[in-house]
Length: 74
Image (cartoon, rainbow, N blue to C red; front, side, top):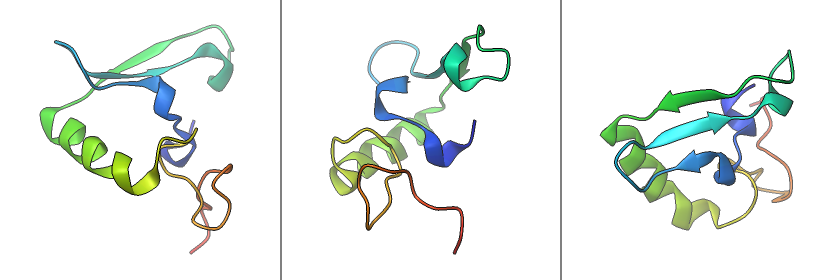
């Protein structure tokens, strides 16, 4: 799983314990869930990012194709 493929729905920014939940379909073994706790600084940055990237599928969408994640090429 690469950060650039992160989907907005995977992030729980509200609540007592903000986290990024990576589902089994994204993992090699297809069964595991990984809950990554998010620091308050990360939550603040992700909230600032939402108005810029919109409310689409990806947290980091491609600037030219909003239905795809950003490219790893510069």
